[in-house]
Amino acid sequence: MVVRTKIRSIDVVRIASSTFSQLDRIKVPQKIVATILSGNSEDIVSDAVLSVVEWVDEICLIDTGITDDTHSRVRSIAGHKFVSSVFECQSDFSAARNAALQIARDRGATWALTLDTDERIVFQGIRDMSDLKNRLDAFPQVDAWLVESRDRSYSKERFLRTSSLLQWNGKTHKALVCAAPFQRGLLDGCVFWEETKSETANDKKFRRDLQILRDETARQPLDPRWWYYLGQTWEGQI
Image (cartoon, rainbow, N blue to C red; front, top):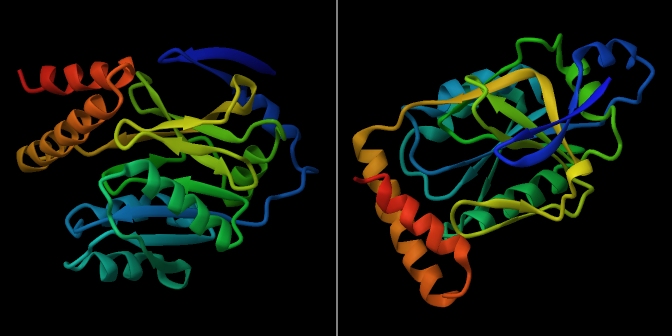
């Protein structure tokens, strides 16, 4: 059964879990590659990797300026699934995400799993990697599968079909473009959650976003999107 729903005003397709009991004859996608963009994150990255390592074919750590022990932490958990790449940080997070998507394509991925270092995914209703692949490939029209937060208050695009034309847009507060509502699905059987950021990390994020948004409102003064996020950023500091 397919049901339409809205998460944060995003119209998506929700596929009932009972649908997947009939999917054994569907061709399994070739490969899932998890991409993790990371700077120095040795204190938090291990739990991110542990949460997905059994569910993907490869874990690609994309180095945006690592100088600590992040590489060895990821490699020790991912084992033979570990690969790495480098992307020079440009204060443009969509450029980084688009580069990660291309890296997954170059690795032969059918699906790219986007995972931040402070995120953890729980596959509570999916049997194994084969079951996950069947679910991802069950509906050919869906190019982006969203995963709900643990408290069901919002969702994020986490599994992207690499053969699609999907692109990330926005130097901060990234938006996935080139996907019509029918090309987005809400994936049942898993949820994600984010580690609470430290005061230092929150301050760093605030200063980073504030500078980017000041630049964007100056560059695109008629685009309300950037003014909205600028106000939201200041509001979060009050």
